[in-house]
Image (cartoon, rainbow, N blue to C red):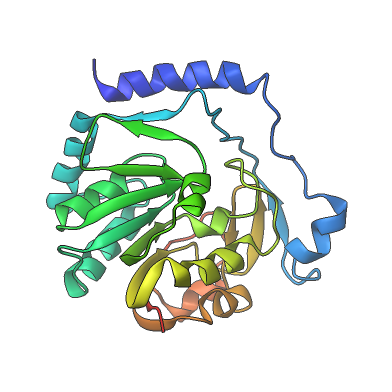
Length: 257
């Protein structure tokens, strides 16, 4: 049975289960509002999603699904974040990952894992929600599991991931500085002089609750401050003047200094 049809069935079942589960807050808690908005300096827009997956109902990645994405990556086809895929291919070709152990930070479909495999890397996915797979090429752990058994990687991918940290959308604890904290944490995940391939929404600073953050002139420097920016793909200064709720996500190649 095609994995896309199986995913639809799974989504229907999950929606029913979620009705009985605690949901992320639909509004920013009053006591955290000032911190989430950087003391009122960034606007808030609302676009709510609940993507908390019960531990007893994990995602499943089949080998055939992974192979499909590997074929797409090998042909440089674009995925959901269209231009981001192209920029990611350009970044990896300039800064190769062949024979590298790569941490994939956050996963909802195995696209980043497939890109890693297509370019000769060995992926380990680290995700809040449980994922299982029939594909032995994948190593899939939860955040809690990784915290109990940490390790160091040659490189890491974060493709549209860190902008969500601390907003509760995926069952993560609320934290106004969740994105900044995880960037500091990544310095212990990536080896010294190792690389972090980071794709995030860049535009006029904003918070879209509980969907994601948008990084502009205020918050982007805060996010990157402890890393050396080696290169960027798709980034332009004019992004900062674009007021969009789902802006483009350029790729930054960062070195752990």
